[in-house]
Amino acid sequence: MNNSKEFKILFFGDLVGKIARKAVAQYIDNLKNTNNYPDFIIANVENASHGFGLTQKNYNELSQYGIDCMTSGNHIWDKKEIFNYINDADKLIRPINYPENTPGIGTKIFEINGLKIGVINALGRVFMPPINDPIQILKTEVLKLKETTPYIIIDFHAEATAEKICVGRFLSEIGVTAFIGTHTHVQTADEHIINNMAYISDVGFCGSSDSVIGMEYSTSLKRLTTLLPERYEVATNPPCIINAVEISIVDGITTAIKRINVKIDMNNEELEVNVETNSV
Picture 1: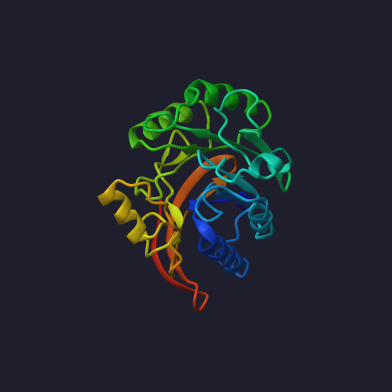
Picture 2: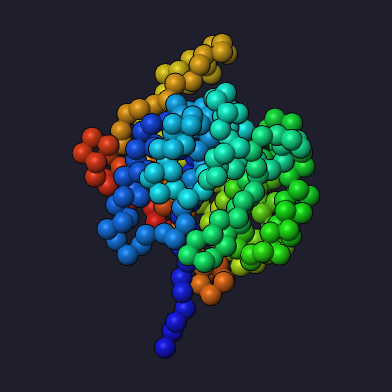
């Protein structure tokens, strides 16, 4: 008789604006009617409030949808009210490699059904704003967390694919459970298991499919062609892309990572098409 217990983690790529918040809420709600509801839900939320940062109102909204942990990145500071509530936001973490005394925390242990899950958020350094070395900071934090739990999830928010691959390989060698790349908003097709660690270079984004990585095409084009500081505007046209990964852990071993790429038509609130559901 097989008594193995599967633990499922669902990780949503960067949420961009209201359309993404509502679509993710609908996606989670749809899962409640299936046998595939995850044990732990993570979402990158640094673009959740009109594309830039996260308001406290939207933090509370996303919490109500069933998201257990919210990661972020370099845009987490874009809404200045973040400084008023980040220290009290028990589901939100910011990149760990900001200087000492930066508000908020970069790592946290969550307890779900008696199982402890450590989550760390970090920023890359290639083509990114100046930041402390993520590799040594991640190594120190992973080894510290492993004294409490063997389950450690990394959100590595970075631009360069090579940096993600290299850092991910390094972390797989010290016992990380999953390494999820974020930031570029373009889902990669390189999900695989390496040294018992789930890996993907970029999980993608959640936002309007009629967009340039979540932003309006017209303003993006004007910015590129004029080189003037045109403010990006969040695209709001449905359907909404949902990019995510589902990670399976059985008896403490990471067994699979499944890439999710679906569209939700927000007009009729139905799951429109399942574009990709690949697994390793």
